Image (cartoon, rainbow, N blue to C red; front, side, top):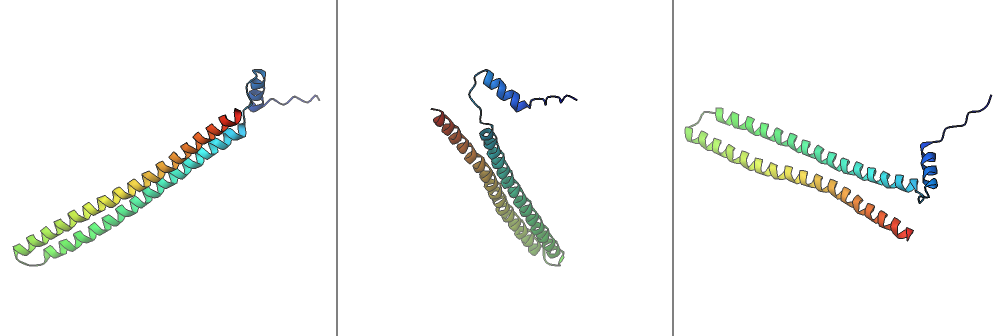
Length: 143
């Protein structure tokens, strides 16, 4: 039996097309390496964002536990017999502590989000600068 010729791969056809048109040679390994670095930077950026999200969830869980604990304590304190002025004073103190805790927690949450976003963007920004340098270097080599 006659052996069927194997069909050309897409890359072989593309290379032949480029040679026929007298196009400059394309370094496929360099292109793949470039995109691999892009994907690695994207992966690092996603990991930084996920880490920030985990920290945020942990902080929110901590805040909820603290809030529930304080509400429980406040409710028990309000059940105790006492004069109305003491009850109002306890309620005012509880409201003050709650407000202070909310402000403090909002600041901490904002810091977590800011840190996570900054890390993620810095990773991508660094890769963009590397890409620009790689492109410059490739043009400098061709001159």
